[in-house]
Image 1 (cartoon, rainbow, N blue to C red):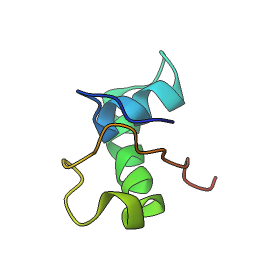
Image 2 (cartoon, helix red, strand yellow; image 1 turned 90 degrees about the horizontal axis):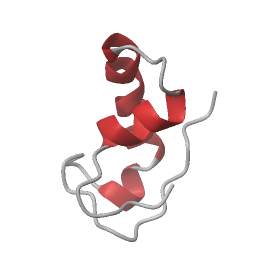
Image 3 (cartoon, rainbow, N blue to C red; image 1 turned 45 degrees about the vertical axis):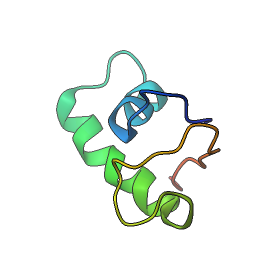
Image 4 (cartoon, rainbow, N blue to C red; image 1 turned 135 degrees about the horizontal axis):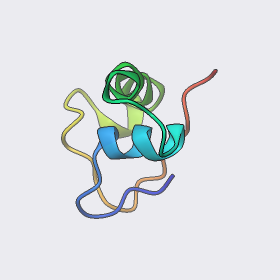
Length: 59
């Protein structure tokens, strides 16, 4: 998943889970994306840089 301007971990997690994902499921999933990509994102998950390629978290 490549970060584009305006992308958030919430939107990435929602897209990854699919259109039927509930807010609760997305809220549970986006921190896993942060943890799996911590070395690319850093401490603040709101500071995504466009062009960064993120890996999905392990299942």
